[in-house]
Length: 222
Ligand code: ACO
Image (cartoon, helix red, strand yellow):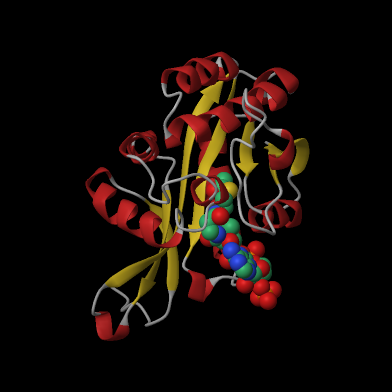
């Protein structure tokens, strides 16, 4: 046994007993800044949104960045990624989900994600049976710029290969995540500008704060 060094950060899979810890991290370091969540009222994510993210844990496709604290005093979560499989039925499924939740905060978010799914249609576009889709990526604000986002995305790509997916896909709602995917050599396949996505009365469905201006869909071919 090797004593872990303080400050050392490891990437590992989220286990089924860690839903509460994962959600506590996401509430603090993901949802507050994520542009679709920040760009719809009220600011707090709804129960169906949180349930949806946590429902991905059993797929074995969610990972944590965990930092060792001093003198083996345990560890804390400093980053997380939530991913899950999708197939060519995704656009249809998303349209139904968005219609079902119409009128709520989660409904507005799904309305945007459904438009993105219809426009990007990644499984049909690349003629593959499935994609491992990244739903959420967050890093503790104090530890950004240290490649933790990149390491979490690499863990997802590795798991996607093991599970036989031929694509990793991600809808980047933030300029920061979009820049990260560009650096990781993901291909940009679709852009939806927030200013162009309007509801029936001509209002923007989501109004994220600057500098975020669009959802950019990226893929990595495996
Ligand atoms: N605000 C300000 N600066 C940032 C942010 C941010 N949200 N994110 C990264 N940066 C800066 C970094 O500090 C770094 O600066 P430096 O070059 O001066 O050191 C530079 O941008 C590059 O950072 P990365 O290494 O690419 O960022 P990292 O992987 O650490 O974090 C992440 C990226 C995870 C997207 C982070 O911005 C975050 O947690 N955001 C909040 C949640 C969110 O919006 N997630 C993405 C939504 S899309 C999706 O989830 C699929």
